[in-house]
Length: 421
Image (cartoon, one colour):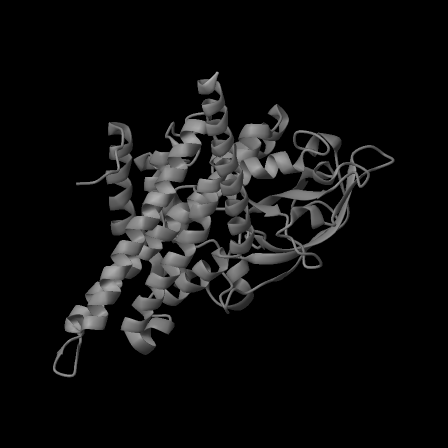
């Protein structure tokens, strides 16, 4: 009996999406990798199988599921309902999310435009993103500063004497910047160094083809290039953009990125659980198909322990994520910071442990290209850094816990004081 309760509409999405991922996306993974090609061609190619699957997903109604019911442009689901669906897409992370127009960083960027964008910004950028005609990137992290503290960001967004703004800076690990359809960067920089610490930053929209924008190089993740979207080093050199490209207003960068990152972290966590579940299935199949020392591998005590721990770990991680998603629905992301942070820390670590056990059961085959395990592991290890490292989130968890404990203690004191009166 499942503790996950979905509306009839979400149940239908769940059934259709499961079939789409299992029967069409996962079987297409080998074709997708093959069609990407080799060398520089990998950054110029959009495999035809992806375009075919996008058309199929749209026909099935599995399009833009991530935009929750507060947005007219979305599918009308809650964060809780989408979290469950996001896990299914995570089973084929290179194909299913993009096929359904639900892949990062586009999802977060579309939310920024939908939530904070002007009518003109929505028309020029949000609409083609929603239609899957273009891709996007989010430019925040920088090589010269510890970017986990966003107040360190050095990129400058300065007013130009001819109107508008000029952007100068160097960014790296900019996911999506390598894609041939990447048309826009949502860029964070400092616009007023004299303002308060968290009011110096602004968010501005930079067209990818603007003069002065240069994708310097793709960066590899444990040797994987993650083409065609990739993770790139990007330079903005005297890039002029019009004033209307500013999002929400000067000095409101933190407000925008916090609105973007909360739900996005939940999306990452649920996709991660999908990878963990697929690794679990591969592990169980593997240990039943091979024998060592006169018995099936599945009959060895240590292997049974691996399987049991993996199941317990995945179930506990799922409950953390669903609780965070439910709280976002009920009280908003700002009031669910502790729950979001706990999920963001725990889920990648748990899925990494499951992947490690699965790799161990495959032996040498587990670290090669014949299974998705090594690729999954590389992405999951990176997620302990992406969208804020574990250490930043654990610090926030502890600070929030202390604050909440103190508030409860003070409330009890007030209650006792009132009772005595």
